[in-house]
Image 1 (cartoon, each protein chain N blue to C red):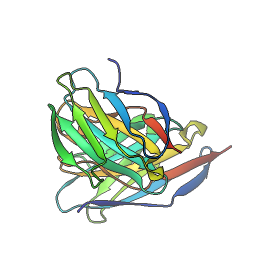
Image 2: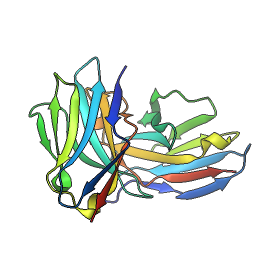
Image 3: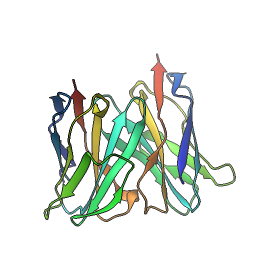
Length: 113
Length: 113
């Protein structure tokens, strides 16, 4: 089985722009979670989608949004980028909504200039 | 609210020596506990997890961890370090597997030849 894939792997944007990141879960997995990883704040939960519905949301501003499609693929969008949004964005998928079977993708490295 | 504390942001051991990475957690309900490893420019790989049952958990690559409820700890050990163990290690907690993972700040393990 193919693992979790994230595209693109690297991205460079400038302040004020918006960006969309994509995550394709493992086949058959219905839950997708997003995490932000920065040197200062570490790994922080952004949101989780299960069967196209947002189940949980972390403590991030409204500039961060996401969605999940009927094939379980997920996208996250960040609008009006700030320098502090530079981070590794990790996606994790699981068959159901529990966390004990999560598999992480390689991440998308976003750099905001 | 859950939280995780990893003692020591950087641990250095000699090849062949014991590896001990410390993790303490707080959780108001029975915790699910995890250790993940991250190699440079990669996502997170699950090393091992505790959900219920046996408190000594064995994982991949010779790692193991013991859940000690009285000490609210879940320390990661490996009897003999290998150069390939050099990476960043993250401890994480979830409340009964139904809430998003909360991660510690991570411990960078260096292995000296």
